[in-house]
Figure 1 (spheres, rainbow, N blue to C red):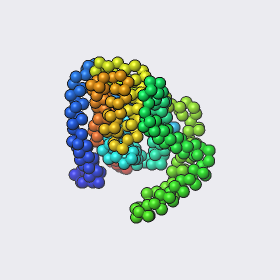
Figure 2: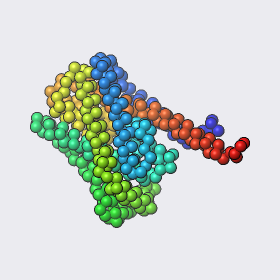
Figure 3: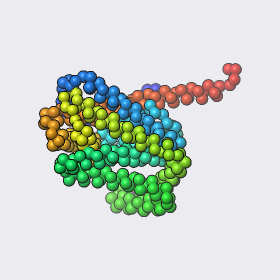
Figure 4: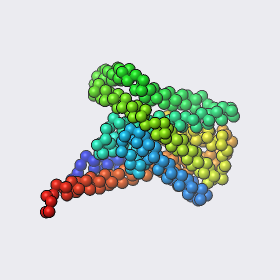
Length: 358
């Protein structure tokens, strides 16, 4: 029955409430962003919107290139939409970054894909993103060091990011070199987490069977990567670098829209430190922290206070609020796409079951 209330409807209703609540609580910043954008040079802002569209499409290509290596059926347009939904979910329902993977897991279940394989694909995506971004970050930090403006907290956050990226790479390296060691380490972590959960009377979040399945998926992923060849294996990194360049261009044209032309050093330093605090922040999407650090970096590099504030608001409008809002509407679009596909599959099966000549 079409009018039947399901758990999916209830969850969507909760997400609508979370969306409205988040927008309402931060309506002041949204109003400021709209006022700022009204004063920008319109053709530069149109270029920014075009670049944003390219980034969303490129994110779909990045996920598709990883899915292709892992023998998962890639659907680039759908993966671009899921990327936007993940950006919405990570802000509306923050859970240490885990909520961003939920749309990919749901898509895997709808398409009867291995959830473990999709989780491994997301892990490889993070490695590609963080490692390509780290190259830009090191250039930005080098510029700040040369102009004697590198702060200790920026170095500390960079170390955290590099350490986390190295940990992800180490997990893949263990799956490549010594799968038995990886399985043993995962078993110990699972038992430790289980003891902590039992001590606080909490349900055990991970079982030995689940860690074994994850270790098997990682080992299988390494097998597929090794047999894919250098071209397919390096393609995600090339797409990741293109994403970083497109993001740099967004900041460059946002600044131009308000009469500020950033040189390469200021551009890379501002962008890299802003993204660093976006990735490592106690608030969803770095709300409040990214704005502060962008202002600090730009003013310390010679950009006037008023111009820095204007650029910050406009830039966050395009890189934080636009993906968040589009992600909410992409969620509904994905639901319709999945429902239409399910109905089409069901009708096809009914036609196949009909007796011939009826």
